Image 1 (tube, rainbow, N blue to C red):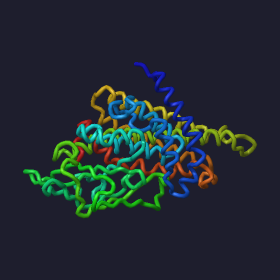
Image 2 (cartoon, rainbow, N blue to C red; image 1 turned 90 degrees about the horizontal axis):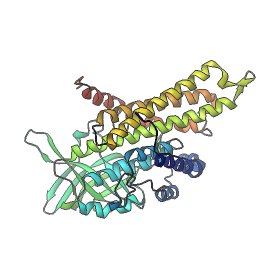
Image 3 (cartoon, rainbow, N blue to C red; image 1 turned 180 degrees about the vertical axis):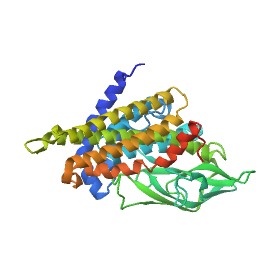
Image 4 (tube, one colour; image 1 turned 90 degrees about the vertical axis):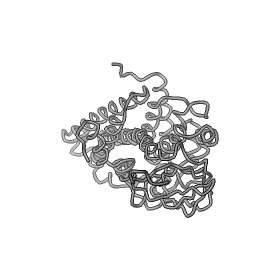
Length: 385
């Protein structure tokens, strides 16, 4: 077994880390305070090649492996969750379905601009009454001649209401199967389509510099050829997309946990009480030791899942495990980091306050921690209902 990263992976890590520290760190707090999506840093991330990382060069991508993508997200999250979310959703949820299930014409039409970061694409799955129970989607699409007519709504959709959003992939009911269950299909809806409205959501606790939207479809008409893949395969497409997306959420948890540890260690070595650095007190040193140990375990678990994916081996169980564990490791690390900072950890002047807020979404988005445990249980033969 070889745990050594390739030279290319190390160069990528150093490059993205340097970028995040020099370009994102100075503006992260202000953007969070203003709930502002930054088109300036978005353009810089695009210039760095952080979109379309795993897409082939034929469609404008970087043609790197999935581990490279995960390392990039990890290093962004080490500094700021909002920017990591923009890249993670832009790749896994925006580009992914188009790349893996789109027709050649759809790929040629959308992927080059998405891979250059000139445009973004949303992933319309969650609804007000269909979160974990995604198959219970209420949005409908009826074929009327050569057009699909879509009605319904989506909520909590990342990257779906920016000035550069080109469109969204929407899961909708397109009929009923012989067994009485809904037939679910995915449709591509471009920004500006008649009857389609995307509204930014504000007042979020976390990822405040990331764009989150509500989507509304009122007799929205799109061409018949906007069907993604085969009719009735929408749920399978969405679940396969989430398997890959869970790895990027895990990367955000891993990177966020590392960011918490870095800040906690630095502060604990600088802050003095009773005449010595607080890191020298056993109670605090043990917190740091626990953080370091769990981060190492999380990294090994996530990188193994990526190793499986890159070799086209089954990885759904490991993806669920990585998403679950990395998310909860960040929770424990953020909690320790705030505790080590004491009262200062509660102030926005210190990054750990933002990390503490940003963490919570990781236990909810792309499958809650409870759902991950259901997924894992089924994979190990526990047959959890």
